[in-house]
Length: 257
Image (cartoon, rainbow, N blue to C red; front, side, top):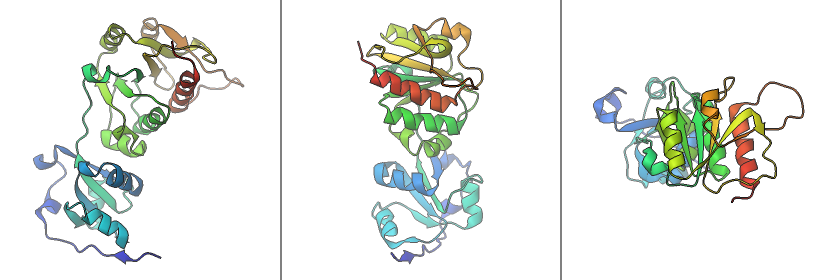
């Protein structure tokens, strides 16, 4: 078994900063062992400080130390405050704030996923993960009521850090911009066509709506083609994350034209 090492507590001013302190506004706190290790090994340049609330293995301590960034031990109360009550597992870090791209930047790609009215960070994170694995090149969020980038980074297992994403307030402006950029617009709807074996435009955007409500009829009327998932049994609609993954996979398998 690999040995563990204790991180000595330090009297550092950084430990005394409240979470709303102006110096922290350009950063964000992420926590949990899985995402901690992901960022450490895939995006070390994003890390500004590491906070540990437990003993760590000697090899991991050396790996963190090699970055030459502040490495601080925090007590359980401080760790809970930094994680806002979340399950931090003793692993927290401060990283550069991740900002959405402008629509002008993100529409340069060919395969986009658009989430309309999907606000749950767990769903969004899971969808980012599927989108990254299934070849999408960007995600746009629209009609948001709330959204936590920090939570979505964690629930996406880091996939949000790999995919360009944008936030657009007005879905009608978005539709006009995408169509003007040459995108064919697809949307998930119960009255849509089953996508199996169909051809899809190489430059395309797939619109997904919130659970329960789906995409508004007015928005659906502006799209080029509607798609649905064939169900074996008559049952309630699929979770939006599951439905998005199925449609992305069907479109990935379809020929592009």
